[in-house]
Length: 112
Length: 112
Image 1 (tube, chains in turn red, blue):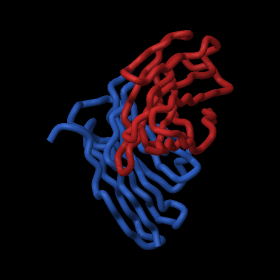
Image 2 (image 1 turned 45 degrees about the vertical axis):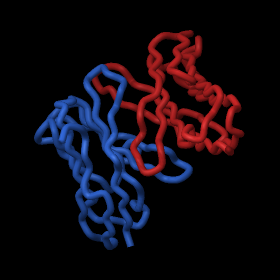
Image 3 (image 1 turned 90 degrees about the vertical axis):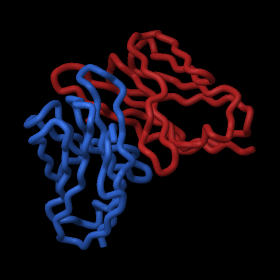
């Protein structure tokens, strides 16, 4: 099946630092998404990307849709303790059988 | 209350038992999904549904059964639970063509 590659599995950063996460696929997708999951909760959408090359910001978060349509990255600037959580990339198969497929996620820890 | 709700939040069952996890959404979203979340595997799609009476297999459907007789409900049944089905299960819903999937709070299932 389709696979989204996210690595490393865990990241540890200092409060105030910037962090970047990447997500790659061997297949082309027309929609890339970034979700965050807080402990004990379901994932919540952070940013959605619909166009190759698109750069979108949401507060301290910036995400880009790769020009090849096979990758995306998410940047978090000036990290704070509440940024802790699991960050998932996801892709959407558009069409009659639209389904949402997730990567394995990256667990982010922020040291105060 | 409006939203997407899962029940129960926690369940312990014995190997071989049948167990059903419930998912209910109040938005009349056309698409609904069931995922399982396991350490090292991220969110894996079990089944999804594009509309009432339309369901399709995801990445890991074996051992699970779903139905969708009404738009708002999407129950997931483990016909004969196994220990490997111990996991956290998330239900999600989205409008057709919309990328923002809304997740329930999850059901933590333990099979002993």
